[in-house]
Amino acid sequence: MRTLAEDTRPEAERVLIGLLRGASPKRKLAMVLSANRTARLLALTGLRERHPGESRARLQRRLADFWLGPELATKVYGPLPDHE
Image 1 (cartoon, rainbow, N blue to C red):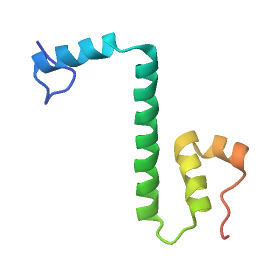
Image 2 (image 1 turned 45 degrees about the vertical axis):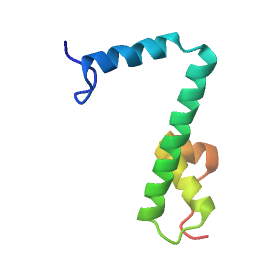
Image 3 (image 1 turned 180 degrees about the vertical axis):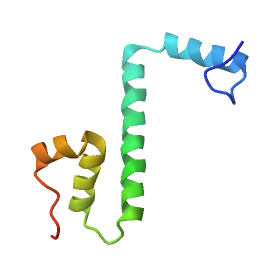
Image 4 (image 1 turned 60 degrees about the vertical axis):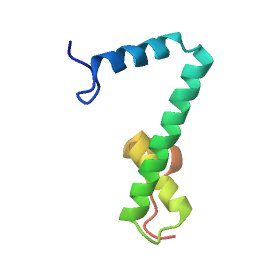
């Protein structure tokens, strides 16, 4: 049997899927929110590395471009300013 992840044994994947299926809706939501927070933190860390010295506000605005796409981020937050 082929697994969803190449580095996971079929028995381990069956256990994981069973645990996920048995989790309450509250627990599943908590896992999704945690994954979302982690993804935002990783994206913000990458932006800090690519744009050292930028203010927190400007990095947050860049994150909006990344997360929402430049077009929607501009509609919501206005254009990314050239200078602060």
